[in-house]
Structures are given as C-alpha cells and as structure tokens.
Length: 432
RNA sequence: UCCGGGUUGGGGUAGUGGUUAUCCUUCAGCCUUGUGGAGGCUGAGACGCGGGUUCGAUUCUCGCACCCGGACCCA
Image (cartoon, rainbow, N blue to C red):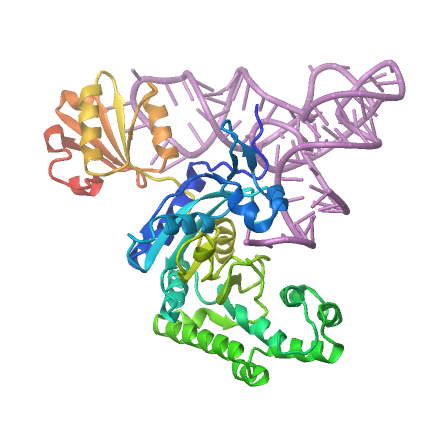
C-alpha cells in the first residue's frame, strides 16, 4: 500500500459527481457572462514568483530544477500565468479580455480546514477595462455563481474595500507611518483585543490618539466621513470609485450581498483598487471563501502595455464547506438510468437494447461480470438503477423483454421489436 | 516551523504486558443462471512505521509518518 501525498486528495465517484455539478454551476454562470474558458500549464518558471517575492517563497512552492536545468514550479496561482498570456498576445486580443478556468494549483502549505496542498480554483478575470462596470461584473458573477449553487444572502457576504482608502488615510498623518504594518494590523483586528490592535497601530508609527481615531474611522466604515476626514484626492478618488462599483453592482443585482468593510485589507500585494472577500455569514468557515479585486499594474509589470484588470478566484475547498454547512452541496449519490439484465445466451439482443438506450443519451449498464440473475439485480439496486430491462432466454423465446421499475418492483412484458422503438426514455409506465 | 487531540480489518468499534484480538457494518461467493432492498451459510480483511524497556509490546516509552483542529503564513 502506498500513502496518498499529504495535502492531496482522492475523489471517488460520489464525491466527484458532486464536485462536477458544482464546477459546472460555476462555469455555466461564467459562460453566460461571456467569459471564455482557457487552460494553462501545471508547470511554470519559478522566476515568475521568485523575481517578485524573493527566494523565500520557494519554501511555499513545489519548485525544482528540471532535466534541462530550468527552475520550475508547480503553479501556485493563476494570475501571473494569465498576465503572461495577455502580454504575449496583447495586440491580437480584443478588449476586454474575459477569461475563466477551473484547475488545480499547488502550494507547499500547512494543511488545515479548507486548505490543502493541491487545491482547485475557478478563476474569472477581466482585462482591459478600468470601468466600475467591470468590477461589478466580477461581483455579479460571483453572486450568480453562489446563488446558482443554492446559497442565499443569509449564507454569505462580500466584504468590499479599496486599497487606496486605508493607505490614503494613513498618509494624511504627519507621523512617519509604516503603511504596510498598519494595514496588517487592521487586517488582524478581528482576532485582537482593542488594546492589542491599538498597540500594533502604535508600533506602526501612529501615536495613541491617532491609533484610536484611525481604528474608529476604519471600523465605522462611513465613506463620506472618511472622505471628509482625509480630504485628499487619493482618498476621494478611492471612495468615489468604490461607490461607483457598488452602484454598478446594484444595477446587476449584486449589491445586496456587498458590505463595505475597510477592515478587509488583507491580501496580495498586486491589488490596486477595489478588493473584496467572501465570508460565511455564520462564521463557521473561519477563513474567507474567496477573494478578488483589481490589479491594474500587474500586466505592465509583466512587460505589457498598461492594462487594468479585475478578477476573482473561488477556491473549491472552502466553497464546498460553505455549501455543506448551508445544506446545498449536491447529492453525492450515483444514479443509473437503465440496467440491462442478461440471462442465458442473449448477449447480442441485450447489446442491441443497451446500445439503443445509450444512443439516446442515457446512462446504461449491463453485465460485464458473468453474474447470476439475483446478483445482477443486486448490482442494479446498488447502482440505483431506475429501470431494469431483462433480456432473458425465456423472454426472447416469446419475442419479449421484461421491463422492471426498480422503485416499485413492478414489471411487464414488451415485444422485442417495440423496445425502445421511437421512445426517448422508455420506462415501465409506457407499457402498462 | 509551532501548539492541542488522534491512529485497532474498507468504514465504525471493544479490549489486553502472554494461547485463535471483540462486535457491527462492508466486500466477495454460495443457498439462488428467472427476480433486488430480507434471511442463512462460507470466506476476505486490522493493532500506522521504526527504535527502546521486557522472557514476551497492539498495550509502557521515545522518535517519525499520517489524520483532525488551531497558530504563523496566505503571493
């Protein structure tokens, strides 16, 4: 017996069927918005991460040197890859570029609830528009995707913030503030006592009065108050941009899921404008369900022309936790439309029936194990077959088949030449 | 990397420093090559790995692995 690699998961048919349904739900919603599916490599040059984040990040990567001496890594996130793709075909792609993909990523991390080393995300991005409508479309897709899964506003909320608001407010203080440290403190404020939170802000460079004032302002989340307080163009622009995004989200029916939450500061250094995270309303799923936002500088930093971008990437692990707790995760039960039971030397006729039903698009199984009548019926039961078509020597002797409804156990005879006939989905009821 | 809890057939469990490790379930076969969900019979299948203590370790002990939480981190 070999062990599974830690942090990697197997998906057996029942779980896979549920996952497939969930993935299809997310992707069908994306297709309705005109997002086009792409697929991307499992392996990228490690420099795509080490150049920007330093060599320490290798600790978090499945990175190695390949036979050709290249430093490569299993891809830990999609964004740099799509940025590379956009840059490579910048001239020929019509804007806005709207892409989605579902695929695994790999990070060498500590395994926790909702976090594995191999994890699946559906990434949805728009490149080439800085309009609030683009941000709103991302939010609208995210809301559509979640509600299509059966979730409602009771189950989740989008916490929306803007990168420039916190930074912009902080820079209005005369003191020399370490903005990153202060924002990190804000991000952690949930988990800290008020005093600890204030202490961290002080460590970042504010004095105690400022720390208290700043913390209150952020927690209050009153955008107009913040605009007035800061009085700078940067903050005014950021607030107005956030308001425009929310207004556009309103038009697309996504506003009701959005809460302004300036404490939602965390995240990727490449975010530049509106950022948001999705949280479980009950707080049972401790980490965020997913995050997203605007990253207007990334394409340029990858050597392309300045190209604004906004995107979101739900992780399937946390999403399925959320759905399971909300009781809307798809049923993990396999179903079978028909089982063609064969007894005696009847293979050719049974095969004809089997293939005819398969041609109609049904899930059809027949005996491949040489089992007895009873064992075949047992098996048909175990795979939740809806209808069993019995092709037995006794039936064929009368030029008949037996159609059995598995739920009721009722059965009836039908002429061989009349099955399946021109019926799309013949069942017991059609023949009584 | 750190903290806490855990690991006995495929799943769920009982138990013990000493003979054949308990029970339920599951799976396979048969009773039954013409009727499933019931029943009977037969069979398969476990003490996570390694070291130590001991005459003897699944049991005590240490280390490791893995699992479940959490911290840190989360590009």
